[in-house]
Image (cartoon, rainbow, N blue to C red):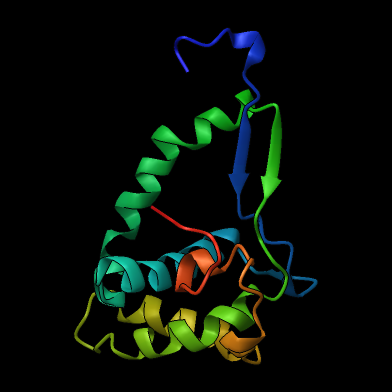
Length: 147
């Protein structure tokens, strides 16, 4: 984009901003949604276990704070990629991964916390998710190619 006139650039900032809450006092944090997305995608496309993804999460967050979030204010528009039913959709993919995190792991408590969060959601089967859904980026079967 260096060679494109800045007047001709339209900047879009995409982020998953969760608008769900368990009740009036307990919101579901966007970071939890994003972490669950990450666990599922890392396993599917990178071969990482939940343990490995949880271990990397602090580094991912630091990178976001440095390289992604500072640019959101420069965007012409923001696109919220969160989907109301995504935890129900991601649950059948995430739970088996989280179940593999052992008690001796430094991230066991975090895995248990995420499992508790997911326990409040009913599962939506993969077959009920449209092939054009943005969530397919995380678990596959999309009509779009992600490279």
